[in-house]
Image (cartoon, rainbow, N blue to C red; front, side):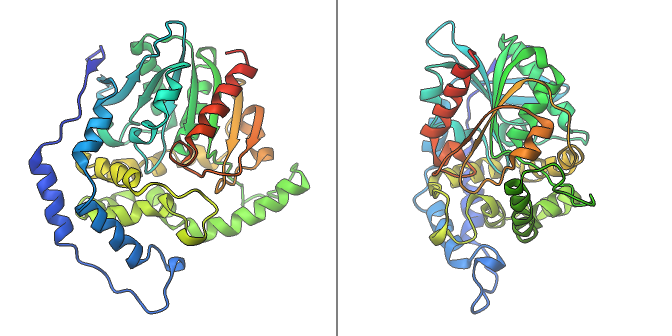
Length: 370
């Protein structure tokens, strides 16, 4: 399948019936007295979301929201690849490759597409192994393969040169697209950018400003508390996959590690609409992609853990509450031309501050005359 074929999300009723049956039969763990979010997702918070999932959540409405946008499917290197392909009404609009992260899906972009298509022809793929582009059925999906697959997708969509925007894993893969083909990428725009610290170094803060150096150690303390999910996914993802493929409540709890701060009542981030969380988790459940999306942590870990060379492509970085992006480290791997810090939103900016994300991207494009 070399061409892009029209695609419509159409989940059979039997798959939904199986999901509801499993939710009705949930087996809850004990909740030790006095245990709060420092032990993990609390039972009360999870129970409330499960009740919403089984009662108020309307998958068919979510499916209609997805199908309101043109979608395509193609096969690249033997892997089915799905994308929303929403062209702007303006013929001379700039092409935009829009990339999500984990545990997100392309549904995270439904709220920003109306504004983005005023300025861009948008291609928003489900990353290989995620949602409708999954599961992946073989190993080897490292950053190079992801980037090359997305470059081929943009070629098939008819775009030779384009802007890349991504958050979380999208902020890792997006810049790598630019490294693989810098002549094709006019601008990279990222949020939730990972800036890994080399803790094996004798001086992990070498060359950093005093402010960035202090943030390195603060980040290290935070990461030691929150890294459990990533350690499992980057070392033994297939063991985890057996559990997540069998329990939708387990999948929801696991994904809440990033969808919700440890204490939702005291969060510095803007809370995410529960319907958005349940839409992402339902897509992951229905497509059986909990395991394959987790494998990205293992197969992309080598590149993320070390400093990659800069592509030379101008890169704009947007920082939202909950992000711990360190500029001095970012500049080792990216040609940073713009750095903005926002006082509201969060790690999932398209869900938590869609207006700020769109404005930041548009301003970056204007500054670079893209």
